Amino acid sequence: MTIHIGATPGEIAETVLMPGDPLRAEWAAQTFLQNATCVNRVRGMLGYTGTWRGHLVTIQGSGMGMPSLSIYANELIRDYGAKTLIRIGSCGAMQKHVEIRDVILAQTASSVSTPSRGIFRELNFAPCANFQLLRAAADAAESKGIGWHVGGIYSSDVFYDERPDLNEQMIRHGILGVEMEAAELYNLAARFGVRALAVLTVSDHLITEEALPSEDRERSFGDMVEIALEAAFA
Figure (cartoon, helix red, strand yellow):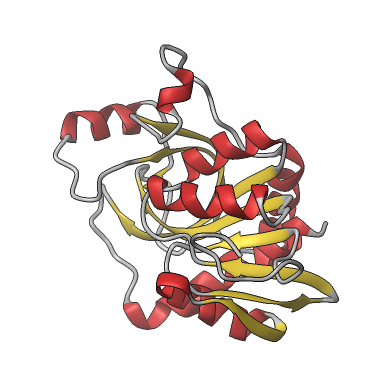
């Protein structure tokens, strides 16, 4: 048990999927895991452990934003021995060729600031995904016949962004989408020598202003969860 995770030793798997929304963690566990058991309810940040094709998996909510994710990822790695952490979440598309419902596999994650900035100081560290996970996720996405993309994303530390000039530069430099957690997850994975990847479903589009209807979200998010699970155990 840690400050923010109430699981006892042995209740957290080495492979952890991390949606931001705790209710999405509950949905994913009930939908994709067998014999899923709730192992964390502290602060309402639900976590479940069960099996997928015989492999032990934990799905733990991370909260919204990099500071929140940093808390859970740190404790999962340092106190529970997590070795593979995959963020599953939504993102906003930033390129015209990326469409609603497509899946983005984040090769790199740019940011203005992360909780690790105090460590790096003047260094512009370039956080990136684990290549083994990235390649396996690309294979899984290809097999599903869905739209998918590999490339850089932007991890923002604000939701209500008032920097249109910055968004313009992200678009200009080929950033595929924007979300709020992956850069710090990749920082922590590098620091502790574990594997990390972000698998993201495009739920809205910054250029076309399209948005995924709420009734379609579960079906579309299901592809993302399956890709993450297949990549973890490829």
